[in-house]
Amino acid sequence: MRLHQEHNDFRDQPVGAGIYLARYLRQPDDGNHLGETTYRDYAVLTTPKADSVGPQGFEETLNQALDLNLHPFAWGLWPSNEVVTESEPGIAAFQPDKWAIKLSLPREDGSSITIAMVVAGNEWHY
Image (cartoon, rainbow, N blue to C red):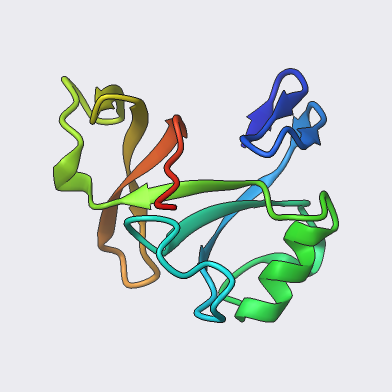
């Protein structure tokens, strides 16, 4: 993924313009994140490295994400049926305060999976 200009996440952490990978990471079940979000699935921004192609474990992905910031730069992943777009790939508003990109990604077995990645809005369940 290419960021054409610096962005700040909801924690106001900056990420500079450049080329990055978005990797799947499940929110840890460690008590620090209990009840914060509706779903525990995220795409986190990592730096592209030659040895980072293909599947990898939680710790490796987390460490790559932490190379950029003190907390991973993350986009929430929602079930694709909760976001309705006019086309695919597409972008649409859902819920009162969120926007998501809906797209299909290839799987290793040749099939595909459709995801909805939140690109605007956040949620706190405090």
